[in-house]
View 1 (cartoon, helix red, strand yellow):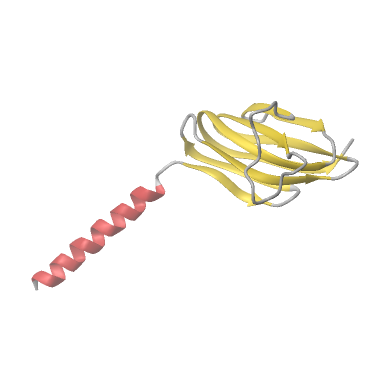
View 2 (view 1 turned 90 degrees about the vertical axis):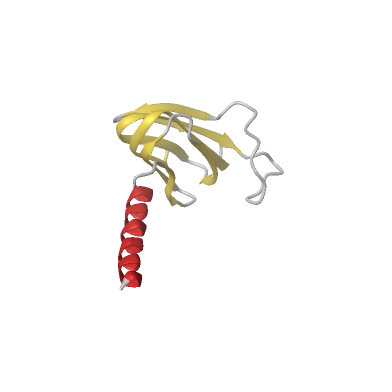
Length: 140
């Protein structure tokens, strides 16, 4: 009898822990291809960040960034890979970003860049919830 009660209590505690874990903040990518990245923030904390690559830009294409944030602010920085860069090596980000955008609500940015591979750095500037989409599209 005591084992059954213990098992029920344990199951309840584990369920509560699972629900609590779902309430944590999240900041990362939910889509990551050569032409499209979707950053998702769910109660993301200020100063959360990540670095990921790669976007591939071909001749006649540009990078567009669009925000659908319900709350907060996110900075997106795009860095061009060096000549010796490959997917297995962390990109050098000590230099100037090729494209930078500080985004709120329905903000957006775009820019024509040289063909090549690019990495993305995202930084949560204010506690944020929502999405930011980075796409490689034909240049206008």
